[in-house]
Image 1 (tube, chains in turn yellow, blue):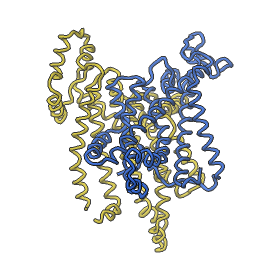
Image 2 (cartoon, one colour):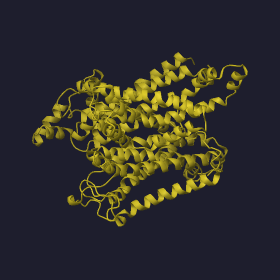
Image 3 (tube, chains in turn orange, brown):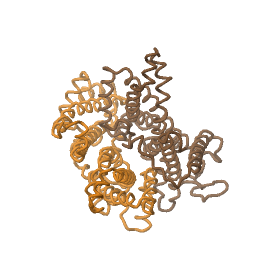
Image 4 (cartoon, one colour):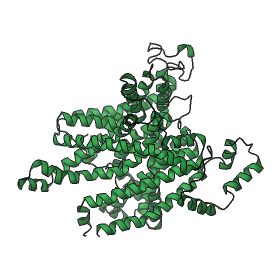
Length: 314
Length: 294
């Protein structure tokens, strides 16, 4: 099977998964232990009498059969009509559009930091295996896997913003504001990537094609970059798909610590205010982002590694 | 794809990273010490109500921000509560909660995974579709959303974590059982007329124990981080009950003058997570080497 066929087949599976995701997201609202209509009345300070609840149910369309509700909801979602927030009464689509850039900046910043720091570190610790740099990166990886992210955020805040006064404590506006939050988010991921790349390089170095390349008299740096790194990066790319999920969820905590007005904080406010439509939209949005990024990673990986083609006899 | 991998995408059977200079005895000592340490923590948590020097929720504003003393081993917090007592009282929730989540996800995972792998057919097909849908959500995002719908609280937090994690265990178990089913000893047992329950409990479950022990020990630390993280955000354990994540959240207003309020619970979390990660690595090295390297 060629690469194009693979991409087409992967794309063909997409609608089914997205449909399932939408059903699950829709049904999430059924988990709510109280009546959403009652919550809405409570939020608008109306006494929840029998008649008021019934009227509100009709207004929300919750008196119709479940599958009709689902059809209406889905068609609204497909047209990017995300509904209105229970609390602010503003359209959710607008609020998300306002807050998304902050979260996107944070995620992008942390991804750049993660890759920018862990790739050189992983390479160095593989090249100097058992030397000081290897032990340092091993130690960092061990700490990174075990440190609570919210605690790390405060430690960084304490030293760099309060003791040394190098970086701003909270808020947004400049690149400086993004350094600490991005690093907090990146540190735990860095640990994973450094070790992954290190063991990937060490594995590849034992392969016969490296010996052959050396026998041909190629320069060591050329072998490293052209042959070894290309394959050693594959597990890193796979891990990127998985860590997208950690990244998305991690922004919630980091935004809370550093007071960034992003999607994560919006989710937290909505959870505490029982703003169910917002939570639903967040779930759907995150799932779509996650599914699409896994798809991209799968395709990139496929293009990178000719061996997957050979295995399938293509 | 990634059939035998944990939630972090790490392969359960990654090549062991055994350095020659670490002797067998040192490794053994480390392993035993880790088990004893975690066992000790669990025991401390269970006995906490009798071990604490003070009532962990006793507010005494006159005693606030006391330095460590014989009476208050780690000093007192902003409400004059004994920090040491609160740390001990929190073990049940932060650590015990994680063990409970692990036990529940493991049981559901083993049941669902082995059932679908053995029965096959439409049951398996439906199960795989459900997996695809659940795996389309990042685990923690799903936990956040479930918790948002159920409402904050410790019980709901545990439920949300179990509901968002079980599918990874179920899929791992399924692929392990599928590969095991082809092995001669299972084939022989079937030929001998072993009933499916006997097959399951006598032959399959015992052989699942090794990989699942590695996987779940490596996950334990992650679950502790999640429980404390959610409680830090105010979605888990509710005040006044002490919990490490919530103690950090309580201390954050006093970070300038009293950073030690955040220091102790953070260290407690980190040390326990480090020890359980270390233990998971030891288990992995042991099983990969066929039981020679413990």
